[in-house]
Length: 239
Image 1: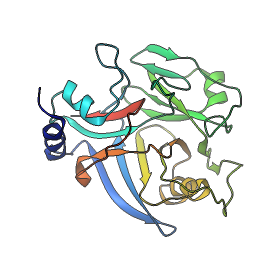
Image 2: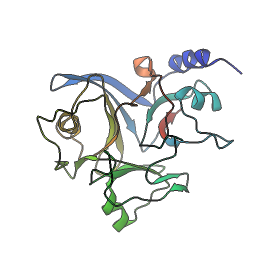
Image 3: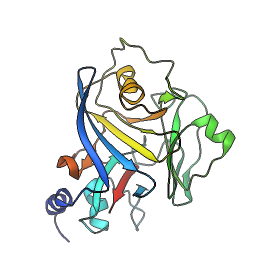
Image 4: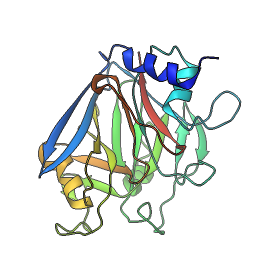
């Protein structure tokens, strides 16, 4: 088996035609964003390998595939110490965790929270109770929270002068689900400013927070592959 460092080098050398990534500034902070055409690209969720062991890292996903094929990846939802999802998780039609609709501790329980749902041709962000009521097509999905933008409005608990700042990542989607935009802050930011990135700069009607301290990105466009503690659910594009 190739060492992880050689896998990472190969990953970063791969062509990144499937995803467009760039660094932008918003309200005085730097962000890396990656835009995925959900109608054509292979956007998928990854949690466990063929042995039932959590992948935990971008390199482990790449090692299970053609190492030239992983062009984008990001942590995609909160998880327990054993890397099991905190909320709803479905991968290729198989449920791993049920939908959580009640309030709870931490950012996940800061309702309203929501889900990223992925089909063969769409990537949609749903508020949790709307998803429960409508039961839309969702072959693969991951629940996280809080929602950042809900039908064009910021989460009601976000304050412009909020003092809780962190490296944060999340995802927004167009109304028809043809395009998903993933973002990670390169500076510490509060929830309000992160939400306005999706609403005001990226013009997306719905957006979902993934995580904070463990936020990481793999993007061949940016010659970037973050390393750190083991992750739970991961969203990725392969080519």
